[in-house]
Length: 150
Image: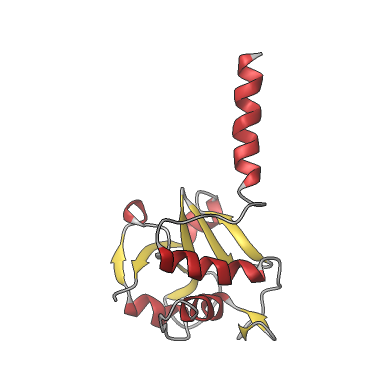
């Protein structure tokens, strides 16, 4: 009985993260995520950079961080160039996570998401939402994390 109980709790904990807004110790990260979570389930729209059009990956990060007073450039490559590059193992919630070769963009960096901790990110996939960075797809394309210099 004890084993079943522990299995249920870990499954509950895993699933519940998708129904409860995450809470962060850092006030700026909380502001960013409060904004980003408003668009969960919205479709990915290439070139999208606001709620009326929906978002692409860098449009979502630019929009959400702007709500916390942090101005990011428009593209994933530009956002990567602006950050201090760190290994994913050193990433903290609120750092950005960067990927290469997710499509033929003519740049090295082609996708960006918001790191949440525990190998999870929030990003403009299709639809906008959570993603597990340990999946084979994201591992294949992972560059690493970037910390915004303030």
